[in-house]
Amino acid sequence: MSGEPIATSRFPFSQFPSGWYCVALVSDFDTENPRRLQYFDQEFVAFKGDDGEIRILDAFCPHLGAHLAVGGKVEGTSIRCPFHAWRFDGDSGICNEIPYAKRLRENVSIKTWPVKIWAGQVLMYFAEDESKTPRWDVDLPDCEQDWVIHSRREWQVRTHIQEIGENGLDVAHVVAVHNSPMLVVLDFSTNGPVMTLSTQAKDIEEAEFKGEIKRTLWGMGLSMNEFVGDVETRVIITRTPIDHEQVEVRMAYIPRRYDDENLTNLIGEAIAERVAAEFEGDIAIWENKAYIDSPVLCDGDGPIGKWRSWSKQFYGE
Image (cartoon, rainbow, N blue to C red):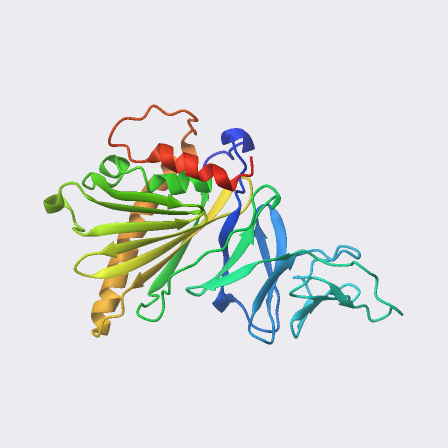
């Protein structure tokens, strides 16, 4: 995106809240070549073992620092370093072979990271300090059996994931930014790291979509919008910090699987175009706005204050 880089002091909190994040697609992997991942201002190596499971570890060999994704070899469920051929177990991170040593060094290991697969996406749990932000699990809905993953899109945006998530609760901005009818909040609740929100157009007759939009967030990295009306579709939105300035946003557009395949495809195309256009309409604002710690809010703005209070649990403050 255009413009000068933003300073890390733009936001009064860490750029890397704890939680589950999308870092790749399952289709990115084969069982021979490890992949280099660059997120949270860190380097990781990811690979698919011969059992079909994907594993993620810190990238650098503790021996002399080689990057395991650059020339490393996948062997079963382990990965071998390209520099001196030390081999590390993908589940525990423990070094399980040094080919030229008479005995293994004790307590040599690489940090491993929890992984989940959802709707063809590889999710990784990240926390800067798990002693302050303990790991939590996610119970994610099936998006494949009765649904079709129609298409995907992705962007990089200079902002913070909290700002993007907050946008979904800012029901008043849709009038000015998206030229859409005002939204009203039908339901709002939180349960630990999970938040749910339901909205609908205030004036149904003026709305292009006349049904209800149900949003579920699992932390600040994962969310799903469900459009419930005459037809049903879902949009998975993931937000993953790359470094102190950039966020990677991915969307998967998932209509319900109808008997009429053409109808399913038309719904997928329509929701992809509409949601992507609305998202892109917000980018210039996110990249240039200031974060106001104590905003002047009014009735009709949506539950922004509740969003910010809920978000604090992911920072380990």
